[in-house]
Length: 139
View 1 (tube, one colour):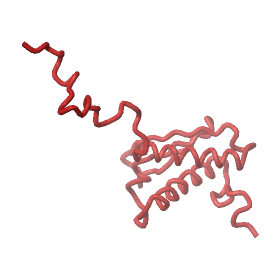
View 2 (view 1 turned 180 degrees about the vertical axis):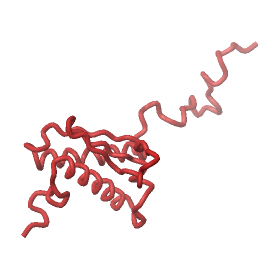
View 3 (view 1 turned 60 degrees about the vertical axis):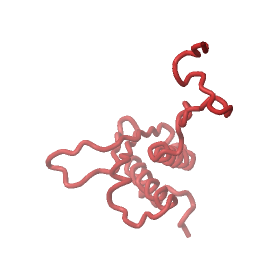
View 4 (view 1 turned 45 degrees about the vertical axis):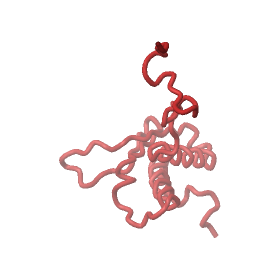
C-alpha cells in the first residue's frame, strides 16, 4: 500500500514537472490602478515640495476614494484642503471616472491626476497652479 503523503495537493508532483506553484505571488501586487494613482500623487507632491521648499515644507497628502456628498452639493469634489494641517486630500474615484473624456493613454491619465494635485496645492498656499512650476511658462 502507498504511503499517504498528507493533504491532497501539498506534495503533488504531476508527471515529474515539479510541485505546483500558486498562480499569484504572496508579494503585494504593484501596478494596480490605486497604487499607480497614489504613486502619481506622491511623486507630484514631492516635486512641488522640492520646487517650493519654504512654502511646502510641512505639506502632507492623502488619497481617499471619494468625498462625502451632501444633499445640497452642486458637484463632486476632486480634492479638499485642510489648511490648519497643511494637508491636501485627493479623491481617486471622481478624478478617474468623472469629467475628462480625452484621456486615452497612461500619459493623459497621469497629467489629469497631476492637474488636480497642482490645483489643490495652489489653493492651499494661495497661488495659481500655473505659478507652481518654477521658471516654466515664464518669459
